[in-house]
Image 1 (cartoon, rainbow, N blue to C red):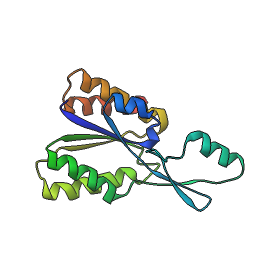
Image 2: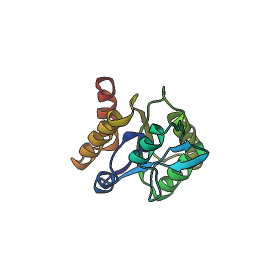
Image 3: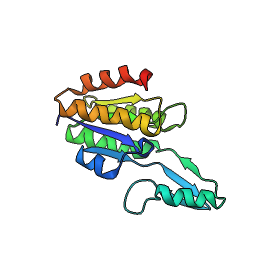
Length: 159
């Protein structure tokens, strides 16, 4: 494997698929009834739980992945010398993409040779997920990060 693929929980990919395809999923959080829930990990709020709460009148809000969270992840890969492709939630729907861009700039100050490519999918849910799947397929077929990113960017307007 020549590079790491990252995405976020809005891509709606199963944990098993992400693990099988070596895709790291970063989680947004959900605020619901005064509590904050994670969208990845063992204690995550499941879709079924969320829908049940919404049916009973709860109104959830989401919170983007912040700059510090992205910085920690990007910095870890920069220290390892691992290139990163982040296939991101639509910038028009969340500040998550912009947080990633800001974090990349911070990491590049300390690691100017790091490779951190960020793609605005302009999509959410399985539109975003499909692009992540295509990225994983391209990487598995031996495509470079640049080739894979170019492919995904060419597909964005078609999703």
